Image (cartoon, rainbow, N blue to C red; front, top):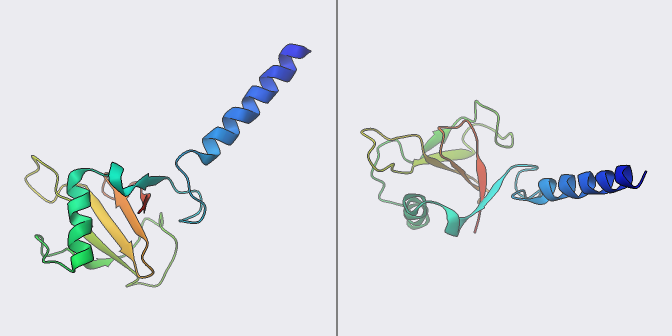
Length: 121
């Protein structure tokens, strides 16, 4: 009986810890988050360029991001814009991107839109 009680308490603690680790309900529901300081150096440099308004090294930087994957909160077309995060050793733009929202949201993906993390500044 005691063993079952302890295992249930342990399960509750693990569930609660998993729900709060790396998630921020105020920034995109149950989406994972990342502190800006923990982003790769190239992503932090891209954020600096975005803050300054450019110039951007890739012609597609600043283009409208369509959110066709539906992983970001739904908004009208034109709400989101994407920027390349250079990948050392890559011959093309690579898979890393910063996506910004009109209201100041920032998202990072390192797997070409298969997943996102809300960036906390």
